[in-house]
Image (cartoon, rainbow, N blue to C red; front, side):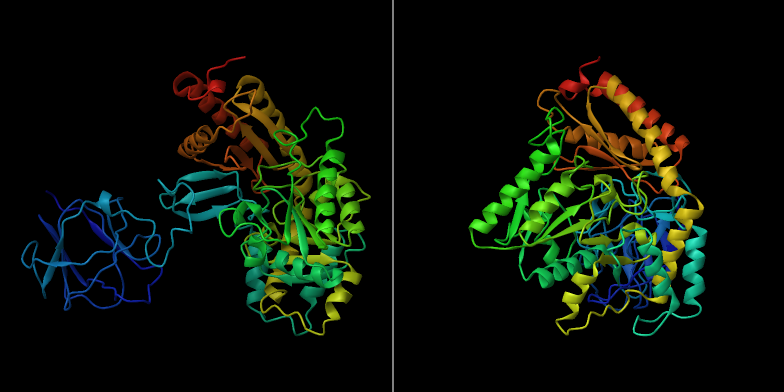
Length: 550
């Protein structure tokens, strides 16, 4: 067997815990293995070859060899692999022996692992069966280590485009001058608060700056409880508001798989007019769904409990790209305010012009509706960790009355505020809100044409660049086509298009791309979807809707 060329890959991250890691300073490849001679205790290595391997070292060390995703490695041509933990066995002589050797007769296919130290199985990758190593991004495109270009249809964090030069320049420029906490006077935080206030209703005029959407929602919960003196929270079914313990408790999407529902959390039906309690044929779905919230509030009060807040994503995302019926928020706010609670609009997924028609998604509910608290994250910093809570003077004063200061080490730093200002500048300069409205309208129309052509598409919903395509197995029951949606996502990835699924049935294809996503991009994606769906109807035929042709 000829010897492939082996190239060391520098470690990206080190495991500080035992066992110690070994980097071979001398390599040789024989017919039966790769030999490390007189290794130095410093880094881990991974290798790729279906051979027997001999390692050399001074000590019989337990090795953990891990992939280029998490550590160092060796590359044999373009083939790489990750290895699981193992204990070496004495076998000096096979493949050579420098200072003592151990042979590991495993195939690389048996060793591949995505759960190497310090990674946990609870931290998951997109496309776990065939993950992509992304090394660069620009605009609405991502690039893997081989230079392949992928169209990104799902990254609403890179709001104005991956690595936008004006945002990068703003961060770099401020980093060269000053990056400290917000205990000092600085123009950036004042300027940023002023710019944000210009996008919001006048009464939302007090701003708290943080690092993540989860931090923002946690603070919103504290604000509501302090202002009202109440404790309980009403949320929508399938909602997700963040990963902190306080937010897992108010996220049915998470708590149903963990400790269950707390007694102070109350769940109202999702205002889904496609597969919910009140559907598209209901004469007043907004009133009907708001009535369900009123019923929940009444039940809470009958138990002697009191409502602090109603938390809602302005457009529920994890729940399946849901469009609450117009007027729903206003009626819900009336019920919540009457019970002494506050209305919290979570704009973390959908704010900053994504819906096109308005800057904030809650504004879709009408000019007369104003939340008591608005939370922001993700897109606010275009990938930089920035978040914000906007609220009223009254809520802020009640929070101050505790006498306990609110301080966030990194929130509101000069660099974070410079980035936030740059994002707002790019949104305005490039007219991305209007762009989202225009491109989103084209994308919706193209997807509706596909719905007319392919029965598996049960619903197309959304606005601007926030769109969901609901795949169904059966037209009568609207049963989620989960496996078919996953198949679609996988096939699109083969065509260098990154899309994902959401919803309780994981059957809703979600579009929330960077705001620079173009009409040509929309046409390209839908054309590929059409080809894949046609192929599925001809060859897969795994459900009733794939066996029907209009």
